[in-house]
Image (cartoon, rainbow, N blue to C red; front, side, top):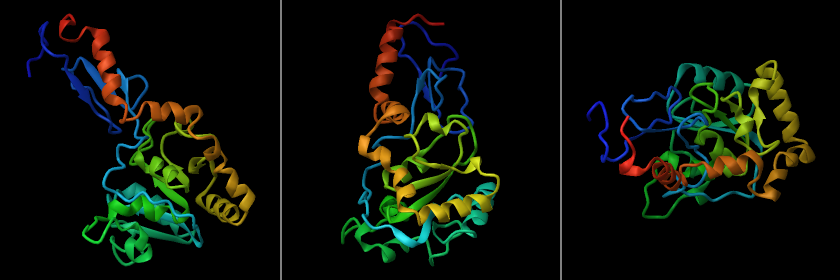
Length: 251
């Protein structure tokens, strides 16, 4: 495209939701995951809830405590997950650190997660349903960057499990109060694993991590969902309108 926009041309929008977000240098409006961007967009909400099984199990496995699933085997993330999962009874689906016999074994464990007899699902089509059977879901971001909070965390919350989270240092700006276990707050993975085991066998303490659900979407989590990809088109249109649309003066 031309290096500069002419008055009368459509406004140019560029979106980058990855951790190392970079402006193209040619856009009029930049959409990113950070509040400092022209338009902020989060991964909360229902946009990813298409064509998948979102059944939430009322049963939680009391023996195998942790669900983990990853098929992008990044070295640092794998090392962290491998060490923590060695300390806790867990099932690892996906391609990375798989311990259940293959990436498509979830339906063997949980046939209710199938979408239908005529549907041949990929492993990610039923991951939400599968993780809902576990008390905890290990959620590790690709990188530990401020405000970079992805679907890895919101899937776990939506499934009715408690996320064990490693990622954005300001994650509490995005989630309900007392809803996750922030792994970075522990002195060691051994200390974290001990806490998870004790919590799993303390019904009252575990229930406290779900207390927010009785109140619905509230606090910072309400703002996070209001800024989700679900609402992005309308919010972007408002910004375009404020700028004057095609009549916006070219810079």
